[in-house]
Amino acid sequence: MPAVADIPSFAVEQASPNLSARQADVFERLIVLALEHGFAGYTMEQAAIALRCSKSTIYALAGSREQLIRAVVVAFFREAAERVEKRLALETDPVRRIQVYLLAVADELRPASAQFMDDVAGFPPAREIYERNTAIASERVRQLIVDGIADDAFRDVPTAFIAEVVSSVMVRIQQREVAKNTGLSDAEAYADLANLVVSGIIKPGWRQRAAQLLGTRTMRASP
Image (tube, rainbow, N blue to C red; front, side):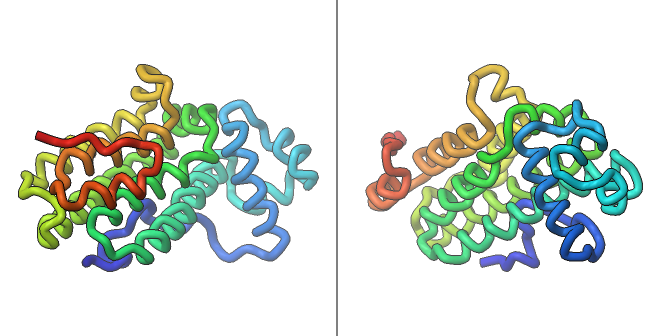
């Protein structure tokens, strides 16, 4: 089983240098603000008013508005990655691991508003971060499928092809195409992707355990 250091889950870099306690608090509240309202339409002055701090306090976090936005997006994915990996580390069942992983990603994306995700897609530096994290997540899913095959939980499927399909869906989620065409949020799309992948490759003897994890979602039999 690969360690977090070997295959990072959902983030690839640190967001910002060492901050004072005051700066760290402002930065964390800035992340929450961006998740709720997006960032494209927000000026530094508006952010300062919302956070009840001075513009100089915000500017001290990064050299420019663009750098600050990038730092916020990096921090969001880095912190999400850490929580996803912690949840994954608690699960040893090969079927549940792939479900836990994708559902954990879904849970981490849930606080992000549609406006935030649209702004990420429309701002090249932020979009590039999301794209890289999507690629890493796709590789993580491929490895989890390989592990499940080795544990005799999944059928001997072409993992490279499955990973390519998963990656394509992830990219469409990241590009907001799934939201536009289906009305699903990114979090809902990842949850449905978990159901789709597992129900398509799981062996019959493992199906009940998978259904218990998904709760209200039904595991449909694969041919």
